[in-house]
Image (tube, rainbow, N blue to C red):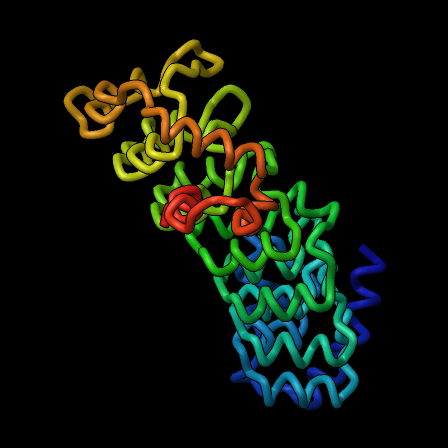
Length: 299
C-alpha cells in the first residue's frame, strides 16, 4: 500500500496545479477511481481520464507537464488501455509516440489490443499490431480475437487473422467461432467459416452447433450445417445439438431435416480442410476451373 501511495504522490502535484475541477476524475474518499474497474479504487491519473474521454489536447498538455505515459494503476491499467477502451485512435497514437507500452498487461491479462477489440476499432487494432506482436502470452487470459468474435467486430477479426492469430484457438470460453455462435453474431460466424474455422471445434466436446442450438440461433445453425457441421456429435452430457433446441423451433427443424451431404459438398469440405485456414487464399494455385475455385471459397 505504501508503494501505491508513493506512486500516487508523484502525480498529485501537477494535477493540483493544472487540472481544473471540471476535469477531475471520479473520486471516492479523496482517491481517484476508474469507473471501468468494478469498484476497485486505485491511482487513476488525469492522463487515464483524458485518454478514456478522448481529450487529445488535454492529453498532450498533461504529457508536456511531465505525466508518465507508462504510469499504471495498481491493477496494471495504463492510459493506453483507456484510450483503446474508448476507441480513441488519436489519443492512442499520441501515447504510443510518447513511449507507451503497447504490450502492457493488466492483472486480468488485458492488453491494449484486447481493449481495442472490445471497442471494435479496426484502425486502433491496426495501429497496435504495428507496435506489438499479435501473439502474446496474456492473450490466453483475455484473447483479442475471442472478444472481437463475441462482439461481432468482423474487421478486427480479419486483421488479427491476417497477423497470424490462430482461428481455432480454444480457450476456456471455446474457439472464436464458438463465442460468435453463443453471442448469435451471424455475420461474424459466416466470416469465420469462410476464412476456414473448424466448424466442429468449440469448447471441449461442446461444438459450435451445440452453442447455436442452445441459444436458439437458427441462422447460425443453418450456416454451420452448410459448412459441414456434424449434428451427430455429443457433448459432455451425451447430448446432440438437436436435443438442446426448443420444441417446434426453427433450429430444431433445420437439424431434424439435415440429411447426408452431397458428394460435391464432401469434396469441398475435404479440400478446404486439407489446405487449412491459413492456406485458403492459395486455392488459385490449384489447377481447377474458376467455377470450382469459387465453389471452394463459397463465392
